[in-house]
Image (cartoon, one colour):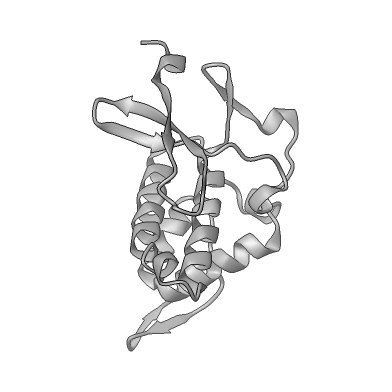
Length: 161
C-alpha cells in the first residue's frame, strides 16, 4: 500500500482542541501520531537542506531530533503543575529509553560530540537533567555519542564516566 494511503486524521483527544490530528499506520494495529513542525517551533533549530532526510517524498527529522524533542517534552511534563501532564512522564521516559536503544543500533544515529554541541544549549541542559534523574541511562547516552563529565550520586550509588 502506498504510504500516502496510510495517513489518516482522528479527532483530538484533548477536549479543549477542536481539531483533527494526523496519524500514520505503521502496520495493522500499529500507528503513530505525526507532528509537522517548522523551526523554531518547540525550539527546533533551523537546518540546512543537507540536514534534511527524505522518506517517501516527505521531509523527515533524524532520529536524534526526535530524541531531543522527547527529552524536552519529558521535562515539560515533569515540571508542569498540571496532573495530566505529570501523568505522561513515565511514557516519556519509556519512549526516551526506546529511542536510545534504536539509536545504539542505528549506524547513522551516532553523533560526534561536536555535532551534539551544535544544538542549542537548552537541549543539552535538558539531557543533563534527564541523566541526573535517571543516571542508569548514562551509558545509553554515551552509546549514541553524548558523554558527560559529571559524577552523579543517586540513591547512594556513584555513576561515573
